[in-house]
Image (cartoon, rainbow, N blue to C red):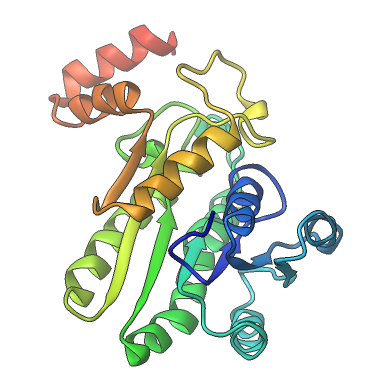
Length: 250
């Protein structure tokens, strides 16, 4: 089976959703450049699937992002698809969150994406073709307990993706927003509560790829869980607060 993309770049590819995406894309015939801080994890991916090309990277290093994209373009060509997935998550109540926690989440989850966009978008626009998927989270829809450092970074990505989508329409570059619910990864393992509608990384990857092959701007899943969260977005604050306290016990 062959997919619609000849080349792709996936950040945050060492584990979880990013790893599953890289494997699924490579298995469908795509040449996939994979980036993460763990070189060993990337080399393991290459050993299991030779169409995967390791490109170690810390997305918070702006100069390193440019250098890695230069290397990718030289080795496999400018990607047809880029999935900007790198991120961190540390749950915690706001009273215990430090300034460093807030800064680190913003540096990785938001500025890490913008570093990649700054290096990538102008090249895709010059070519007149390409697809960029920004991986946010349903945690960016509204404020949630224990997400003071994480949630705002994902809310920022929602706004960023919408802005870019409006600006590049008609250019040949396709901007998408990916909003997963709970996915069983090393990050969600930190949650001290039962997670509704939790999915495996493989199931999440399959949903994302099918969504990218379609036409919807936002790929949000699982659908029933997302429908409730989107309904909660339009509730008045008092009602929303009571609902969250009842559901979470917090």
